[in-house]
Image 1 (cartoon, rainbow, N blue to C red):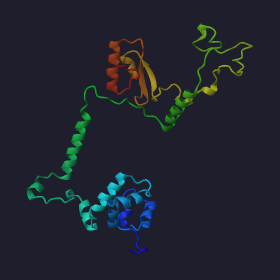
Image 2 (image 1 turned 180 degrees about the horizontal axis):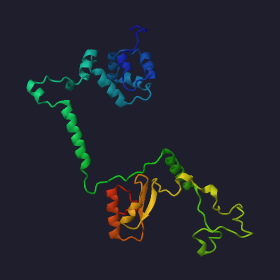
Image 3 (image 1 turned 90 degrees about the vertical axis):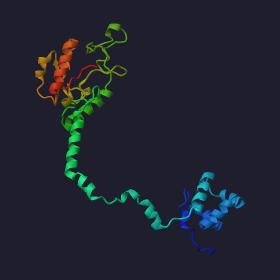
Image 4 (image 1 turned 120 degrees about the vertical axis):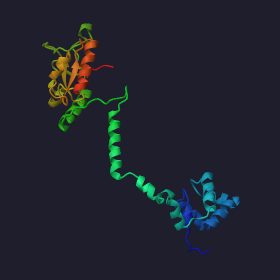
Length: 261
């Protein structure tokens, strides 16, 4: 075999074969698939060569042997195999063509089926909550408000750790010697305007709805725009009246923020 002869493309296409491996094979004058298969089957020769092929395990060698033993397929045969037989559509008889519905009829059937699917709603199935129709600017303001709220510290009364009665609520410190009022170091942060969120998002529910408090079914008339406003049932309302409010709100397409279970 002449030294100018190049390594076969079939060897180059073997799995996990790289340039370093090809150089080792070329060094041992292995340039054809037949020669490589012969060397693999000869255990003594292969053991000496295999030690130089880094990253090639016994499973890969076995895979090489199987691929080399199989006959190479010609391009024409490979193309024939790649084209699925299903693509060859059998010729239809005149009866089948007559029975076949038109494309317009198919589209009408699909639309009718889609309408039926929309109408059918199983009992107890999950129904997504109504979302408000808000501007992109308001969406950004709500996201910014949430971000500021996460980073906002807790505000406690002066000396809240000294007396149990001061643990809850907030009172501005007014003493002339108050270290908290003077904002000195190592004191709790005091409420100030810098901790506020965006003005456009103030007073809104986290979903973006404007809350309207209702106590009975008639109070649902307070909702002027169901796309921007949602109702919150007062906590004093009983279960019977609450159920009626929820049913009426669902009829009117109004979201109830605290509908319960």
